Length: 421
Figure 1 (cartoon, rainbow, N blue to C red):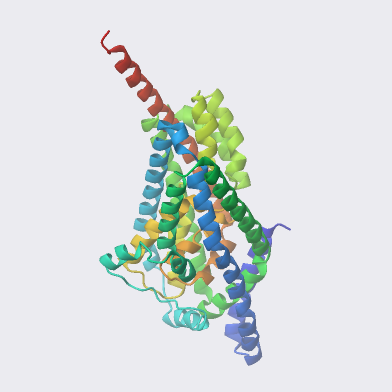
Figure 2 (spheres, rainbow, N blue to C red):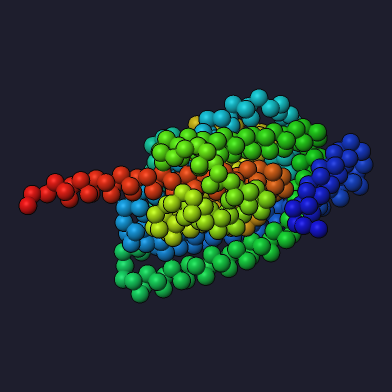
């Protein structure tokens, strides 16, 4: 039996058990549920303990290990395009999600019960900052304190600045630093794999608490999360086609045909990297993209560029706030958008990695991370659409950048031809 099936069984079993306990009113069952509930928190804490070293090491390796200067113009334009597309995805998610979630029915007593169940496990109230306070908070006076406090956005900004500085040191030292952080990131991925093996137990405990407090409303909210999450990914997927047609000057039929093999692998495997070989083959044989695009840009993009990365981060944060009856202010939304853009390049390449990467966003606005287990349990369907959209966006970006290189080459030739003799 696959881990996904086991986790779904844990989710359904936990929800049903929680609803039954709440309806029975039997003191023994209520006491038993109270003993089981901490297992979910322990499992979530295990995920949280990997976040700081994982995000930090992946950022350092991504910035220092990828020598964008070595590929010149393509590398710079690729980074700009990736950031623009991810920023668009974050903005779209931030605009669409809040009004939909606000329409969901909220049971104040259920939300209060969930908050009470976390008493002693850390605060669940999000601090409201003014814009000036928020800007000042982005630069940590003590990076170690930011890491200890889980202040994710200041920590990420410091790590980015550290990585940019490290990219300019001597090559021998740079390679040593990259090797160290690469080892850290791989170690954290192994540790996350062990923690995910325990997901059925953790999800059962979390779902039991959710079901006991929210009843059938929990099932409706989870279904709404799946629909909104998947729907946003489908919108982003559809948006890649006009990008390739207009920006890449490529006929729609040609782009669709070239993307289909990689999309089929992505849809069935939920793995972007597994979709890379057919994408490279189609880019080389059918699309006739330049060698620099095939050999450098596509592998780089499939490794770090995920256009849908902000979707599970922001949608998940809003639904967790809904579960716990927490009101998010505009400044929280701005924090989530910025954090999701920066954290999008640190999504771990493991099942459910898109949801696990939402932890820094939750920590950035002080939302209870416990809800991540529920979202991870129902991630199978959204993950299918996320992966397919990510793969398609990488191919579309390659087409746009290849067209840009053609224009740049024509301009260089024109300038060269006009030089005085």
